[in-house]
Image (cartoon, rainbow, N blue to C red; front, side, top):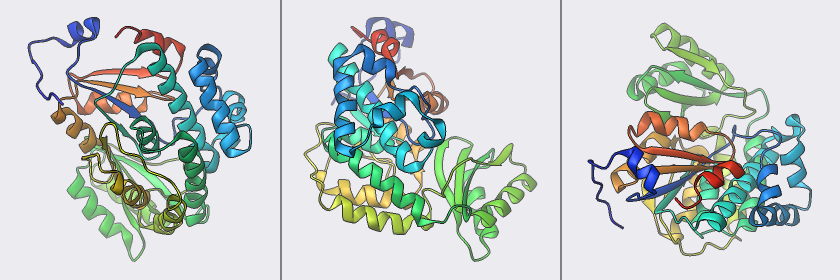
Length: 328
């Protein structure tokens, strides 16, 4: 891989010419879903339509209809959300590849999005991935009874101070950093009462914002370890192929090209923090100067703009997004 970047080449020139040292494909996680996602892709691109058909066959129910029509309350159920976002992301990926021929230098995904990245890298088949994340969603929801866990966004407190705050708030329970999303934006997770104590402490210590998130379980904390163990059993029967490109993992924020490590990293990921800010910094150091978010929403694009100043950030979630990159 070539890592050199000419700092004299202005980003606006690069985006016009389509000449980039390295491209990264990045994929969103839970929370990006909305009713209607993917319909435009399926209507315009045979490659995307085939992905939805494959998802329906793999899962044994009409996931495509759930994505295209909702209802929102069903789409928000974790066991449905995870395969739905994965399917839309891979449908967008296949449409993009069919229409543009773009090949990434590396890939990454936020939490659930790491499965989309592994499909992109050729490590997982789509059918295996969609069946696995359906189970992953069930396991993560069942790990903690509804109402006993919580997550909260905390803005304006650095990592060390937040760790100390969580230790003080725990009082024998679990609360810890779950997502390092961008500088100054961290999500915490754990027992609901401990998270509430952490929110109060954060406000006392001058956090810009500290608020509960509308999620059904405390993802990426120690309480998810039972889900990770159950996921490990499912992954035991899944084949992992050689990676065509490295995937920058949530757990280590480093590129992994070793297929023998994929399963252990996915199991650990369930209860470990998502190191998204460090992952983007790693890709920038590798030479990435264009990030293409593939899948529903633009959450990652917004985070990347705050982390990698000057990088070109684009989004592909529908036909117009695909066509904007045609020839690039």
